[in-house]
Image (tube, rainbow, N blue to C red; front, side, top):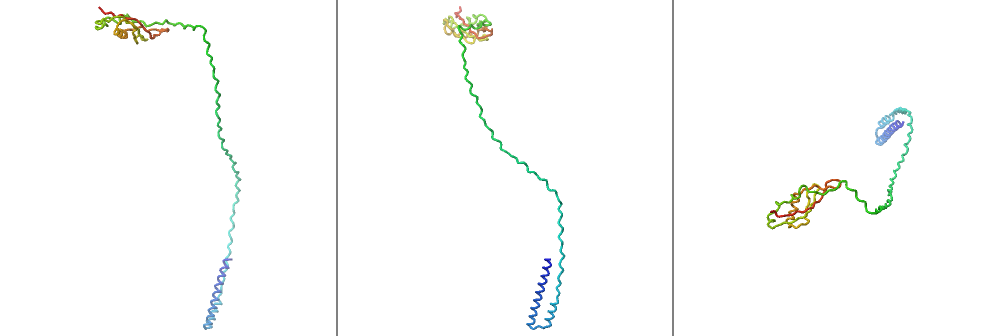
Length: 223
């Protein structure tokens, strides 16, 4: 309806403008002395114009509303239960218990024995000292005399003591006395350490052990 009314109003305005122009032209013609017939023809042609109004357009009915299918409402969703996250309590540090120190133990010495100490138990085997192997006279002979000792008439006795190992060999020798010159004393220990051999000493268990041996030698100028 609004569109049809607007179109009809427009046609009327055009017709009114044309009529106004015609009247202006007529007035102008009358003033200027134009022919009366011309004016009548124009007025007659203009006034006899039929203005046909177009029929109003048919109103279009609006389309029916779309049917919305009924859907079941969604089931209610229960909210999740609240989670209470509590921070873990800090670890409790306990001081280690230190046991009290143990009381000192008083040690009472045993009573001193009354009287002399008991004798040691007797040995299972009688200990033995070192003994020479063979004849000790063969350790030093006349062949050991040097020419200069004979010329100087060196002679005399030499006392010595030797330490014998568990293997029966002389480990050390020392001069303990004698009347012979020092050169003969030194030669005595040197010859005995090289030549003397012994049966090793034994202890109370019969095992070989170190021992000692003492003797003397007479140096005499050979004839």
